[in-house]
Every structure is written in structure tokens, then in C-alpha cells.
Image (tube, rainbow, N blue to C red; front, top):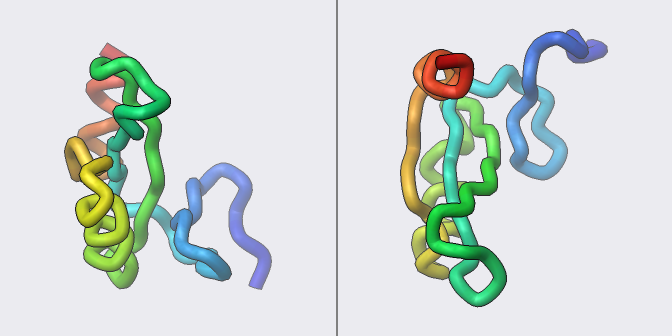
Length: 74
């Protein structure tokens, strides 16, 4: 199955599922405090990716994709 290029995909390695969540993070050793990088997650990988970032102290926020898009467009 070829993913739709208009539908953002999960950031988990090898996953092509549609992204439902945005994980906002930053690495305090590299980024200013207000900087936010993002990973996208499907329902299946949200917890795993959140834990990966959280253990390192990088995770700042987890938001539904639609909410993130709405706030970015405002």
C-alpha cells in the first residue's frame, strides 16, 4: 500500500500509518527552550515514542494532530 502524500505518516521506523498525534520536543543541549521539534505518531506508536523522548527529558507536549494544525494556522 502506497501512503497518500497528503496524509502525514507516523515517525516510528517502518510505520506508514496516518499520524494522529504530534509529539513536541527539544533537546536542551542543542535547542533554545522555546524551540519545538516534532515527531508524528499513530495511535499504536504514540506511547512508545513519548516514552523514548520522555526518558531523555526531551518531551514537551503531546497534542492531537488536528489541534496542532489548528494552532499552527492561527
